[in-house]
Amino acid sequence: MKEHIQKKLSDSKTARWSAMLIVSFTMMCGYFLTDVMSPLENLLTTQGKVVYFTDDTSMSADSLITKVKLFSAASALSEPELAVEKLEEGMNLKYMDSVDGIQTEMEKTVSAVAKGEGWSSTEYGFFSGAYGMINVFLLMLFFGGLILDKMGIRFTGTLSCGLMLAGALIKWYALSTDFGGSMLFGMNMQVALASVGFAVFGMGAEITGITVSKVIVKWFTGKELALAMGLQVAMARIGTAIALGVSLPVARMMGAVSYPVLFGAIALCVGFVSYMVYCVMDRKEDASEVAVRQEAGEKEEEGFRMADLKQIFGSRGFWLITLLCLMFYAGVFPFLKFATKLMIFKYGVPESFAGLIPALLPFGTILLTPLFGSLYDRIGKGATLMLIGSVMLTVVHILFTLPVLDYWWFAVIVMVVLGIAFSLVPSAMWPSVPKIIPLKQLGSAYAIIFYIQNIGLMAVPWLIGWVIDRFATLRDASGTITGYDYTVPMAIFSLFGLCAIVIALMLRSEDAKKHYGLEEANIKK
Ligand SMILES: NCCCC[C@H](N)C(=O)NCC(=O)O
Image: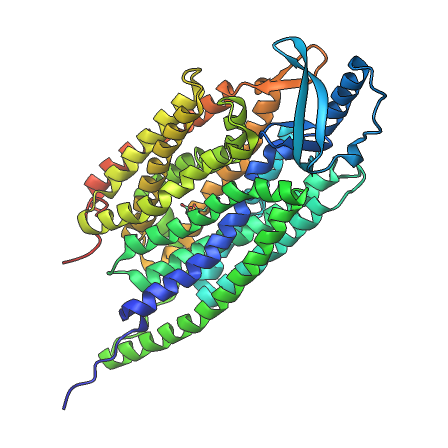
């Protein structure tokens, strides 16, 4: 008679790849919401309504009305009854504008009118950094890791998806409400409440992130681990790319910045349901694992103990990966928050296309992250991949800093190179952690890495927002903003890249000493 051999559910290719797709979809919705406000920086920091024309230029509604009236006076026409509230899509307007210092007659058609929120760059930076605030100040990410290792994947993932959704709804409420200039914590009420929402969302998103990483390690250890992690990250990047590409057109079409957030919250509800589906699979995987152990007469693995934290904290390799993560990601995610406006003011890209250039970055990574992940699975060289990625990040930021080649095509090329760097490092970094830290401590290990990384995700946008207000905003004699010079903010991003190179070099030499296996293939032949 043929002997029946118990198998784990994860031994089935279909089952493990389905699990990967389901949790990655949830994460993708989270990433969409994380970056959905980035292309709206210019709109958020404009006071009053903004008018967009069919030729892809835009102007504040107040200034347009003044210019229309100038035209009426110059052409001796009776002043039209035009007011900001009457501006709408399809209107054909004649106005006077200064072209090369000469007052010139212009005629343009309005393609959309959207409401700016009048935030300062500092307020925008504060809001963007709020993502990491609860994680950092209330140590919630750290506790999230402990909860994950103690309470398991199903409980933690459900909790974190709920937090993401609650945060997204608070943010949507804040952005869709007119608080009439009231203040909270000495801050514009809208900025404060939107930041609270983003902070709650960020707590959920980061805990979901560590949970999803643990899910992938659980189903793919000894199999296609780096490829699966690469594909999960690639799907997350699709979320970022969609956010960067569609957020501004949606806000314009609907006339307000709150709508992209609302659509993201609706998508997240679907992501929540998909996580529930994964929970069913997770239960089956656990049951099959128990059966395999019983058949083999193995004892159940010991659970996580607080003492295990000592082992994590005592590992130099772990700290180097953590610091590399801090520096590398400080140079990428916060940069994306400011990149759309950089494209408008440094490279002269029309606002309606400006979000598409930063969107190239995550798009590039969609193919490359799994590709490099699979390379790491088969031939290794993880520490070297991280080093090359860090060098590329630094070169890119130096090129964005220098006042050379301020053409849109050059920005595209540089952004593609950044996309390659942004594929190399994550595809090698995340699958390297289980080579240094054992599975039962992995939730806590990822949580600590994400915790330190969140300090950067929080503080860097605060710093850059303040630096833009202080050192990068150009004004005319009357104090009106005339443009931005991004040299100082981009030089700061270059410094993060330089630190990443030094740490990647140290990690490679530590690996050579301690034999973590970072340069070895993941798939054992
Ligand atoms: N904009 C999303 C921030 C997610 C940060 C998260 N802690 C993370 O590092 N995820 C892995 C990745 O490479 O995206």
